[in-house]
Length: 81
Image (cartoon, rainbow, N blue to C red):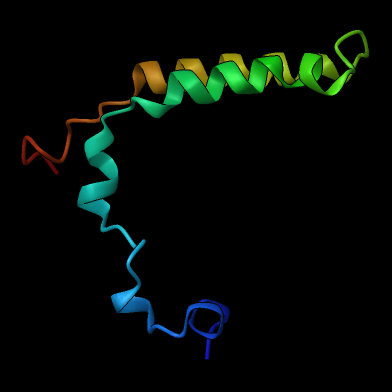
């Protein structure tokens, strides 16, 4: 018995919040700019923007932006692969 089933009382297949891969990829990369923006602003929001560790968040935001930019989100819809 999994933790999700213990919490919700529902088996995994019928969990109302479960999304199939097809439904999950329909967003087409739209959450990625928001995720990158939140990642970049977290050091300021949490009060350590002037610390060296804040540079890691900037690098992560840049990496998220680059990966989202080069990802072909429509690949499976075209039937390739």
